Image (cartoon, rainbow, N blue to C red):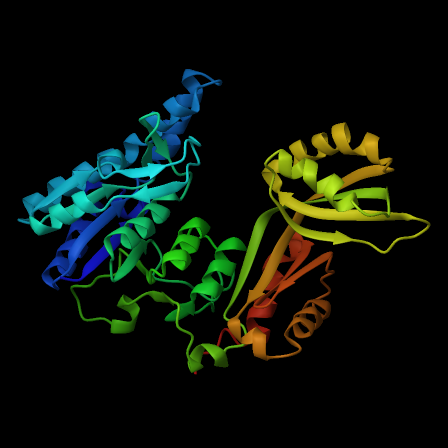
Length: 419
């Protein structure tokens, strides 16, 4: 029988009534002839509550005990869903990450999946069981300690399990009915995409789209697991547009329809901060000297730019997550500024990044220049630029973000129905 992994996020399992709704979705796929593994998140708000309890207990808590606490949210959800499925007459059992087992690294709070043994799940399928799996968690085999995969880790759990059991597809159920050309809360004319390439989804996830966690998309790419994003709140039991039920398919096969769209979506990220190191000597090794210290502190750098040298001095700018801004500035002042002889370090936390993404950009010229022209016509100044084969990103003043998104969305005809 074909296998399917279904993943349900926190809003989809926020109450027992919503868990019953999830069970109806699972029952539909079982009746369709699938062997089903369901991966669940904690009920909406529960993880935040558990994290708060850890902090209240001690500000210097051990990360291993933190994992033991926060992983309990998914354990509760998996047990409740198994109870409901059994009540409906379906054979089901709950699984914790360590029972499968999902083996991970020992980085508590942000562990990486290393291996998954699907043999126990296989045996359960042969018994006719639906596997209800607590997402977000695993076990470090050497220590025997429970681990968690970081926020959004249930998406990664689901994709990894789909790869391990040879699933036909992994369906990610959320509170939105697919991937849109941009956030509908910013641009009301945003359209749901019926299909998007893996490369485009990876770029959009990395650029700020919150629909899928980037690690899950990376995992899907590595193991060629087709993904589908759809809503758990779409009423499947009434006669509505079939396309509205199907969500967005993330595929590894590019077709002619995809190539016709030069730009597929507009992504944006408000959580950016810019740091500039002024008056550094223009000589080999400067970039490493600055960014090496930042990398050693496990701080992720995004857009980077080095200005033209004047009198042997140059300015070096880059962006980091806004939450890391203060720590990065303190680090540079303590370790980099004295040894480099730079004149100053300045920063700006009121910026954002706006990006256009599309595999059609590979075969069309002038896409970036059109983006720059549109922003210029709106009076929006570009502070930094970053490009790849299928995306162009700009750093702009945060107050112009929504204007930029709407203007670009219209300029690239993303408000028009797909051809």
